[in-house]
Image 1 (cartoon, rainbow, N blue to C red):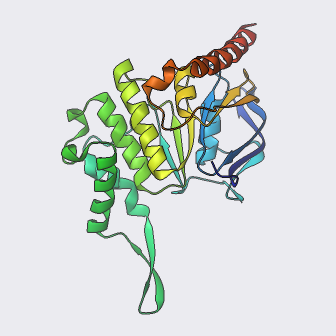
Image 2: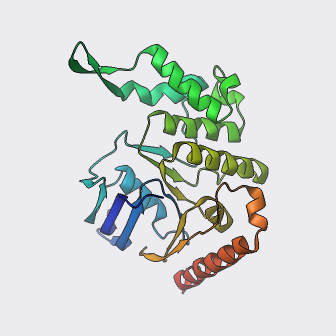
Image 3: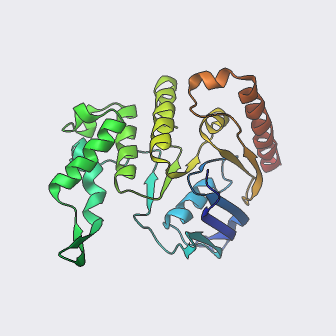
Length: 274
């Protein structure tokens, strides 16, 4: 982890207003600094605003109060500097694996010097193929480049979604429970795949999960959210060495982290039910 702040969430509040005029405060006074190359996992009881916070970082929802900055620039909308992976794969069923991965690259521009002049141009077809080849290989899908989503398993679809997120070369990856709908074996494999990918590319990651064990396995720091209205209740640095894999879960220190974080999350759940 570097010491340079990448994302600064500065006293953020989010209010939803219903048709009847009633207000619901989803987040209130959220402060969090995420550093360059960090892998942040966010856990907390249902309804605490985890997804709302991710959507605001993605620029998909406006902030009611406060601000969110990426590299000191206030986020006011979506951008290619942020890649988003949702729990539902959101693949285009009429496009192949390669075409799905390359879809976002249509909006990318490449800056280069030609005859002493700096020009900006679109990526060529060959350049896009080289990029998609790289990320298909990274997620072990190169042999399925011409397959359609209906021909893929759930785990393979999610790997396509992850490769698509990486292919636009974002500075930050935002993931909203990307493995939540998968079976245990597939989930375990994709956790390890994601760890390998993160260690290769070292993108800053913001990852939401309900699975405390998953959060401990993946993260450099685990953020625990309070019950609604959501706030940052506690930040737990996960001091376990990388590379990590499923065997990491057998370490006594791993279980200490898991039990500590689960206890805090469950306490918030009980508070929410009162």
